[in-house]
Length: 223
Image 1: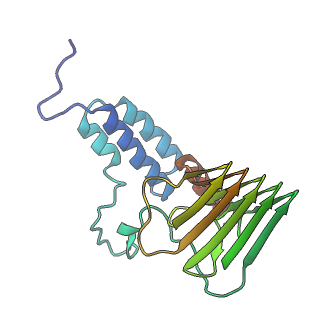
Image 2: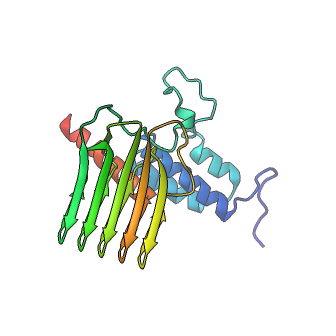
């Protein structure tokens, strides 16, 4: 039998190690840890035997809900799930995307009008809203798919409402368990799918970390 831990040194569970690892990933995504620091701490997290060891590894990167530090962003405690997508009021922006016997793609920096219709007939479209600018606080995105497909990628910090109809087809929707819910912009997706398929998802944690690191690297190169 292994030697008992010192008094008060409660052993850590696998679930607690996973939670500590999640907190470290979030810290890296927010810029509180570098990639190298994340790698080192992740190794230590999964080697940790006790709760105090885990607490020491995450203690300097956890922001309390009542953070009142003078440089803390206003409202940060309710916007911890991601930055607020940019909104610049106006009627201009992408209003229509047609993919008939062809394919369409929108990604990077682009502007989405208050109402946009996407039509896929024997074709497909991919719309990535990660870096899109919205023309209103509430945007309606209508997607009609017949014998085709569509893929919608949503960023963190964007509330989404979904209305859907699928006939001899299907819609795969995975927007995560947590909704931003902090009064930010909303995209209402109206999906009509016939003999086709539409996928709606948020970026995975790994994708967010990779994007954050890529942007940081690009800034360093620009400087």
